[in-house]
Length: 513
Image (cartoon, rainbow, N blue to C red; front, side, top):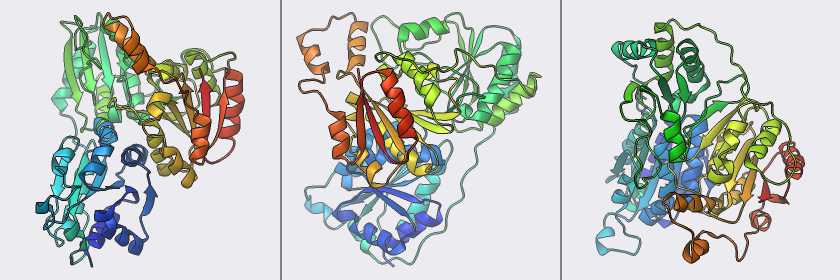
C-alpha cells in the first residue's frame, strides 16, 4: 500500500466523505489512491479559491470537514482567501497540499515555495509528513485538529516521495473532543449582570446562532430586556418564521456606535468584542462606548447553547416564550431594484428550508432584515471580508445538502473572483439559484472613500468602475454551462426566481441595476 492510499483510507475512516480538488503532478499518487478506493466523492474546482470556498460552504452545512487537494505552495496560495474566510467562521477544514519530493527540493525546482509558511498564515494546525509510514497517522491527526471545537483549519503537506512510498496501512480515527462547558461562576456572574437592570446587549455568534441557541437567548431577553445581536457577518444562522429575529451589528461605524450608545454591559456568547471592520480617522475601533463593560459567557469553542439554557434557568426565565413576528409580512414588490423591496420579494418567494449564501455587501445589506419573516432557512456569509466567497460557498453547501434549495446572493465585482464555481455547479448538477446584483461598480468603495472625508476623482472613478465593457453575466454563466436570464425589474425577478425554484439544477439571474 502506498502512502497516498494509506492517507486516503485514513481520511475515509475518520469520516471525511468529499474531496474538493484541483490537483497537479505532485498529487497524482493521491488521485490514483482515490481511483482505487472509490468511496470518497471527488469534485473538481477550476481554481483553488473555488476549491477552498466549496469546502467552507460544505463544512458549515454538514458540520464536518471536507478534504481539499491542491498543488504545491502556489496552488495553496491561490486558495488562501477563502481559507481565511473559513478560519474566521471557525469552519473545520482539512487541506492536503502536495509538495516536491524531499530529495528533489534541495535542487530548487520551479514550484518550490515556503508551503509551511503559507499554510501557517491561515491554519491552526500545520504538519509536513516526512515518511510514508507516518502519513496515515498525520492524516488522522489533521482530521482530529480540524474537528476540534469550534472548528479549525488543518493543513497537511505531503511530499511526492512520501505519497508514493510504501506504507503499512491506514491509521485508526482519533477521538473528537467535545465542546467544553462553561463554569458555574461565569453563568452566575452573567445572571447578576442581567438582574442589575442596567442596559445590556448579548452578542451571539457561532453555535449560539443555531435555532436552539437563539431560543434560549430569547428566553433571557424576554425576562430581562437585554438586546440580542449577531455579528455584522454571520457564519451560519437559523432564520425565518418561527425563529428568533436577531439583527446584526451595522457595518457602518457611525450607525454601529449609535446602536451601542447607552449600553453598560455587553455579554459575549461565542463572539468576540465588537470592533469596526476598518479604522477611520478620529473614530474608535471598539463599538461599545467608553465605560461599557465587556463580559464573557462562552468562548467560541465552548458549548454556547448549554450556557444560554443554563443562564435562562438561572434567572428564572419562562421555559417557553412565543416568538412574535416583527416587521411587515413578505410581499412581492414591483419596479426597479431596491434592496429592501428585493428583500421583501425574496422573503415572499424563498423555498422552505432554503440555504442563503450572501456575498453582496452593498446590494444585500438591507435584504437581511427584510427576510426575518421568510420561510425557515439558514443564512451564511463571508466572515473574513475576503470577497469571492458566495459562488463557491453556495456550491459546497449544495453538495452538503442536496435536498435543500441554495440561493446565492452575489455582488458582481466579488463574483468575478470565483465565477469558475458556476462550472462546478453545472458539472455536479447542483440545486443552486445564483442571483448576481449587476451594478457594475465597486459601490462599497465609494462609501468607504467618502467616510475618510475624501471626494471621488479620476483615479477612484477608474478603479471602482466595472464597466467599459460591461460584464455579461448571462453570457458568462452560459459559457460555464449554467442557464441564465437577465432581469431589470422586481416583478420580472419574481417570475424568474419562482420558475427557477420550481426546477432542479443551477440557474443564474442577473439583476441589472
